[in-house]
Length: 597
Image (cartoon, rainbow, N blue to C red; front, top):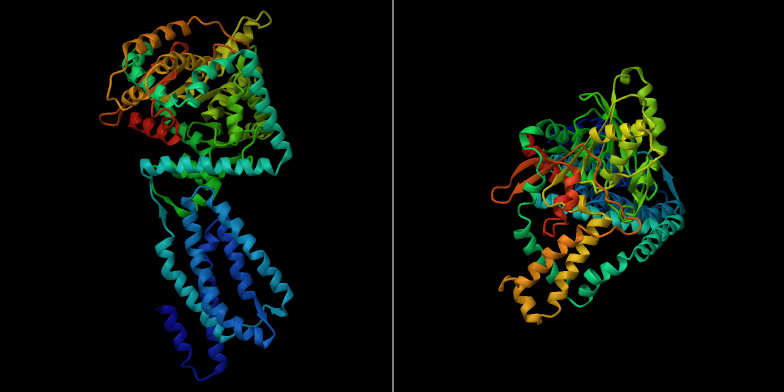
């Protein structure tokens, strides 16, 4: 109303010059205000829309016929449409993983021919403003003011369902972009093919291919796999209900410090995934503009200052060379933190699949993750060491963290830092969330006592965290082989059943036959005695203690227990409907928040 009054008052002036000066002054203020929303937004779509609006109003066609038709179209259709779009689209795409990239690409593709047309039709740039133009600018600015309060504000904490949905969609979009980047990048496609070829060759040489064929492929092709998985789940629910008691070393009161530290560091591990995963794990409302900038989003989620986010390494579309990661200063704990992203693309999954062992720091390690640990340090070590050279950080330690694939690489980088003294004599701490088994010591005559002590020190400085039924901490060659043998034992019985009987068992209309239960128990005992195949080692998470966060389904509370990584070797992959969703970063944050509080 104030803007309209200011504009109307100018019409009462008897002097034309005064009218024009007042209108120009009003327009100047209104035009500046109309850009506030786009100026405060750091999204790509906002930048594209801002460029479109400036292009629209910077051209005045000199041909009278073109101007006659174009001016009303611009004033009453195109201009207001762009204003509405600039207010609605940037705030809407934030709820769609990778939506900003997609929308900005489509906008640029749409605007390109329009700008080319501008260059062909005779026109004059930056023409003097007319009263019609000024009126239109005023109306658009007023419209901006009325809509800004409605659309630009805070992004609320998501519900559990929204978090799971956003994480799943983020993964699917990431996979899609990964595929597109591989199709358009011959060298990346070549690395994919080489990785798949090596994996396939390893399965055949080791004999695991045949084991998976009997336990997984054959029942899948004949329609029995899902029934077999359901039967195995029901047996496990009863048969190994005491698995937590069998591995428990200490209670929650003995691991309070580990829980407190993990609660804070987990936020860094989540932030390594990027803005989309941060949004899915929000525990409080966040300003819209905060979640449009990578550095601001990381700083907001981790509780550090924006200027303390020193390095963000992003491999577009995923990378098999270096994991996405960032380096930040944590002044509260007086440490420089490097946080590594987990699997969120096909490239990451291919690294996970390179599970055969290799030599690493005088031990055996997961081949794909060991190579990634080496590559990551080669890329970022120079900038990290330069930070340590600063006077203000002379007393700071080094903290390594990650989730999933990032946790596996982080635990190996922790060992590498201790053995090779990559950061000198500074303290090195490691916090890993949902790491797969990645390392084990073996008999090595060339390993000196000093190296053995360094590895033991690295293990002592590392803490591992597992959330309830998460299956990733039990994914290794050994655990996969055990699962294949158990599923084969179930399939040997179910293949003799009529389909109707399997249907009844699946829907719990009939009890599981006792012979299947006995066959599963017998196979489990035999699994513990099986000899290792080529490329297989008894890998574990190289940590001092495992903090296992157990969920009570009755009231959604959590209990924490501490156990030794070595005791998890005798367990099996727990087939459960939550085995994948329990792996999500926001699930780890929720569990740790509950235990810490």
